[in-house]
Length: 78
Image (tube, rainbow, N blue to C red; front, side):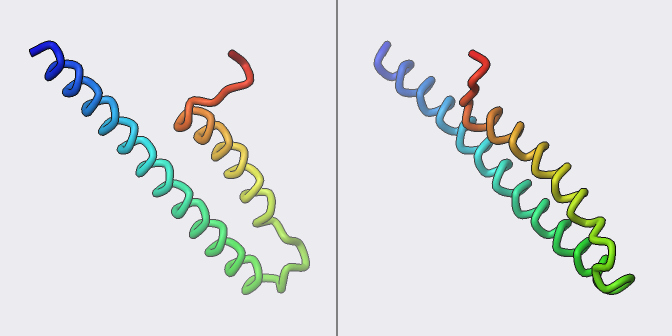
C-alpha cells in the first residue's frame, strides 16, 4: 500500500516535470518563429541596413535563459 502511494507520487512528479519540459520547448519554437518573422520583416523594410531584429532576439534569449534555469532546475545561485 505504501509502495503504491510512493509510485503514484513519483508518477505525478514525473508528469509535472514532463509538462514543464514540453511547455519549455513550445516556447523555444515560438521564440524562434518570432525572431524569423521579425528578421523577414526587417529585411523587407530596409534590407538589414539596421538589423534591429537582433536586439529583440537578444532580449528573448535572455528570457529563454531564465526559462532554462527554471525548467531544468539548475541554478548557480543555490
